[in-house]
Length: 91
Image: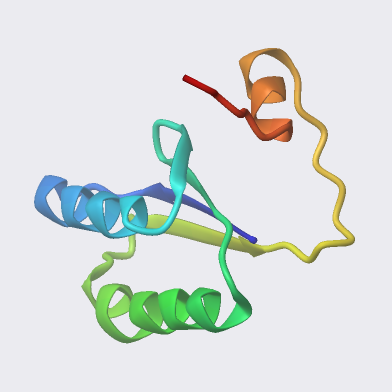
């Protein structure tokens, strides 16, 4: 799993980056995404960020990628606690 947090000053780049992340994960805060996928897809996402986006970030921009393993523990409170379990809706 990846946690990607960003603070990008350029609106156009920030929007493009956000839309890119939306393809793979869910927004858990305004500028924080949680991405769960196979190791291969996660590696491809990191490669795209490194190869395409990194050279477009300015010195005032900040992007953090937390690469979490299955052994990492995530503690959630409040609304975020609902994300811990899968929701099954039968209609």
